[in-house]
Length: 163
Image (cartoon, rainbow, N blue to C red):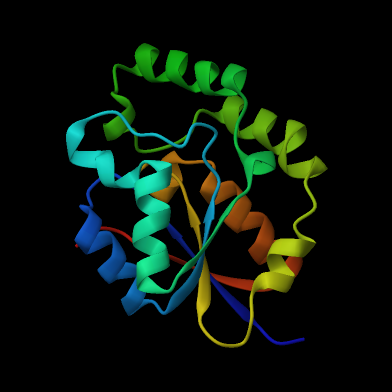
């Protein structure tokens, strides 16, 4: 079985141009959006809102899929925000996921998800990228999806970060 490559990337720390540039450098041909809500607050991140992003990707020749089944529920997101508040960290400066969030995301969402279609979408040419909001994969559920892909589907993971 060939080893497939999967990238992960977030919104924070990029602008529209540098985001597309990072995807091109990593030869990403498919962006897998795993956000629940496909908008990002703040004018500097307007480029990441679903319609604008899809238009920019189409122009760059990068395919787009929304995998809502892999997005955290509102309840899970609130659990993470409560932990952020308790630790006194802002959503944009979070460095890691709350243990309870990671545990529940895994049992409630990841364990029930069928990742086979994602794995079969990883062709020999180019790579795909799991896409969410947080700058650091460790602070985002995309790292849990990536970990599962690496562990059970022999996918090589690379995290793309802003320069």
